[in-house]
Image (cartoon, rainbow, N blue to C red; front, side, top):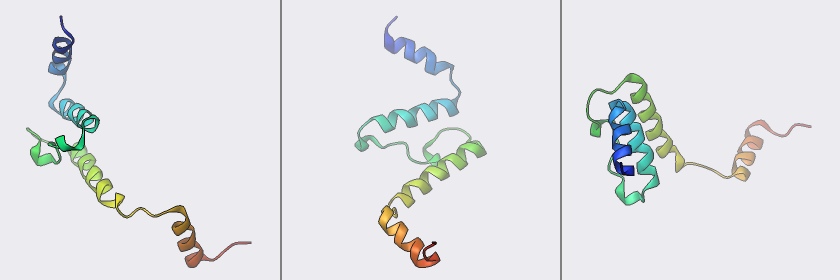
Length: 86
């Protein structure tokens, strides 16, 4: 039995939700040009509420990543708002 046949047998035993999660992990390993599976609309079958929450969290994580600030900026903002102690 080849490695591909073994992988197919294992994947075939997974639920659709687990296969979707596996695909997401695999997509992260590939170059970004293969970013095909992005939203729950692309996913076949019903989506559990937990999976919807997870997908929403991932979308928010991508959106907020562009607003990250440096430690120096964070320290300056905290100092400005709360002052210094000591």
